[in-house]
Length: 450
Image (cartoon, rainbow, N blue to C red; front, side):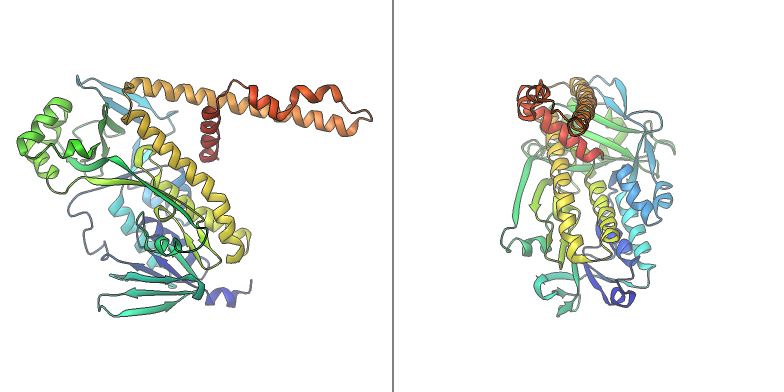
């Protein structure tokens, strides 16, 4: 495609969060004119978290996307490696469960700092312009038009070649696409909510072992803690709203923690615990699925706008970052032709996104809505990994045998009729030892492991 044509491409990115700012970096590398519209204030001059630090787990998938725009080293240097889970039992006993080999780990990163770094990186491109305090009012992808409302409260019409919806789980862009024919959408709120708490530093150092994802599993609720560079930990309490509603006073909160998280009280401190608990109400968690992720060649959804998931598989941000990377790879493949790239993006990402959504919900139900003991859940996970490994080996062997048969079949003057019936595909899968759910699970793991 001629470079002068590329120069004229105008893209409106709706949402200046993690995915929106990263996508702006990717698109700016292609010399598109990028305008990012964010409804909130600039996080570099305003605090979205109201004094509360939110941490996220950055995995290999997310790092690959950052690497593609030259930001991996910068972000990794600000993260803390977590090489294992540290399970806190009710008795106070702690047990480490590694993620894999010694070289495998995930990073605890500050959401706030990561967003600031991505915005700053995007603004370094001369073709990127940020518009904060700009709310999307209307989205008309057929005409390449959006209407935004700035701080002056005067609606402004903006024309563009591509609208990129990165405006989160409650996406305004998606709400406009839902009015289009054949657009499928579903959402599910789970009965649990979450609340952020803080474990402060102790004598200038971490109050617990820093290179772990700390977990307090308690049947229908649990608490986790991720380390911060400030020597503190960001804790998240996941619990049914019915349980949150029972804790109305300071004494209720202290008694609850004394019963279920006694070792956490001296780590947090009673005063800070009560202060954090009543700072903000418990927040809901929603799972969103939709199809397609695009509309013609004019609009595409990325990140939570396309596939918000519950956080129990730790892949929400990473899946959004991978969206950006996959989209960039498709732009390379189709030479920036949006009419080819957008449909291919939907075809490629919808199965993967639905799979990670199902896995996240599976983890939520397995641990939160059953009485299975946590160590048994870990054992079951190890069993599943063995099943997956053996299943993939079996499938690989089957493919090899089938390929050999086909090769011999076409090379031989006499068809091998006596081989046909035992290897009838439908007969094999109907009589295999894998139940349907196990095969579905294996397929989902394969999709997210590619």
